[in-house]
Structure formats: C-alpha cells, structure tokens
Amino acid sequence: MKTKAMEGKNTLKARVAAEMERRMVFAREKAATAWCQKTTSSKEMDSVLAEAFARILVKEMYEPRLGCATTGMLLTELSARCDLGYCTVGNDDRAVAAALRA
Image (cartoon, rainbow, N blue to C red; front, side):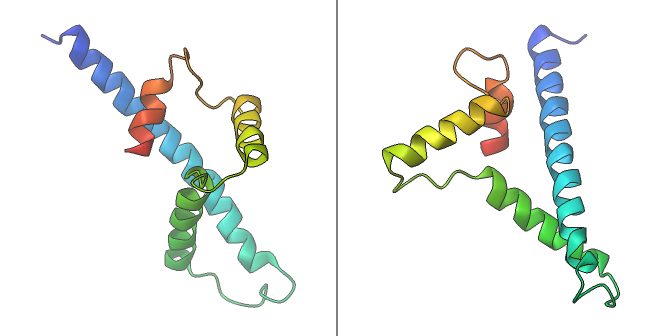
C-alpha cells in the first residue's frame, strides 16, 4: 500500500524527470543547429558529440551565475524567472526546482 508521502515522492520524481527531459529536448535542438551553419553543414553530424553539447548547454543555461552579480543583474534574473514561469516563493513547484538544483 502506497502512503501519501510515497505518492508525493513518485510525483515529484516524475515531474523532475519531465522537466529534465524538456530541457534536454531544447538543448539537443540547439546543439544540432551547429551542423546547420553555412560553414559546418557539409560535416557529418556526430550524435554522441551533439548529446554531450546538449548536456553542457543544460548545465550552463539553468545554473545561475549570480555570485558576483550587481543589483541590476539580480533584478534582470528575477524578472526573467517570473516571466518564464520559474518557481517563486509560494509556488507548488518549489520542490521540483529544489530537486533539479540537487
């Protein structure tokens, strides 16, 4: 018999997995564009390399670099997160965001 806590963990796990897959799909599409440029379109695509680029893109795109940020940079980041639907205080998706950062 599943407890409510177990169901919550499974739901969270599924939501985290879905978010990671959404990020990877976007990053794969961006990585693949490297082979669509005028100077590289004649090169054979390397799917292993493209996947590695995608992983790097996901890590770089979603990891905030605000350690030495100015007030303006912080406000821009906060504004972008609000506009893009990132998790904010009071949002039910805080657990997903925390799990993704872990």
